[in-house]
Length: 359
Image: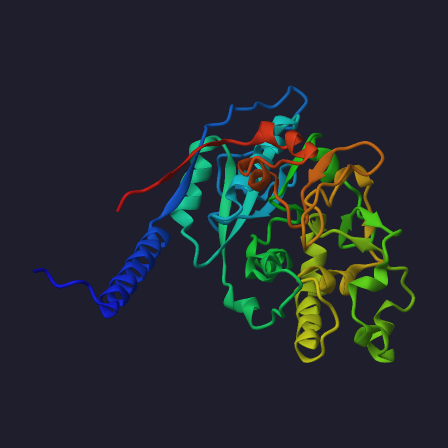
């Protein structure tokens, strides 16, 4: 007669099953998952748009004249596989609402470890007419300076790339509009790009002076007479770094990247803030920026940094919708749990269908 299975045999079977499932999960995790995006319509300049002189020519160092033209609107964004769906929607919204879309140059910054060929092909397939460059950002240049924050997503080195734009972009690019990937525009970006910075200011952004500014820094910071003196003779207000107009010439002359890094080095020794890449910008610039109308950053639509709950718009007109915070519209839409305002992002979503590449 056949031998009945022993308890030992059942344990062996259980272990085999567990290891088999673990192996299957590992294979699934290793299988490249990507997304397909639809091709966007092509948008054309209106008759009032300035013609970029010599736009097909190259300068002495091989850089295109178009890329360097002060008549172009220069937009900088980071680019990675995790947020590329948001980036594609942002680009579409910018082009759709621009009166001179052919005069916009996109400067995408991607991690040096990212698959740049994949990112370039993805952008080109949906926007074959787009004027863009992709710049490689060496994560190691900032990783050593990053301290853990209240949300792990804020600790990604690419979040700090905005501090290095003056070094990454060609020196001929003198002014840039920096934008996060979780936003859409419903107005002409040229209006924002034309913000006057005055004689001395390095950047412009919507300020929020009603926010509790002290909450962005720890008690250790405020109890230090030396550290808190950094805001002496300034009237600092909170501003969101996801939408900024930056004079790169002034940034380079003032060596502001080094100033931001100095505060990050202090943070490594003494914990003076909790919120990733934002506080160093506040420490260097708060109280000395040009204030932009709030319509250009209706931020916080992603909720807070913990739960990402739904939020309403701030009072007033809207030119830019920004899902800063934990909740992202594409994630909530895919989960069939959208917030009401996510419906305003959905028309710019170019996702066609997700698919897995078989090995």
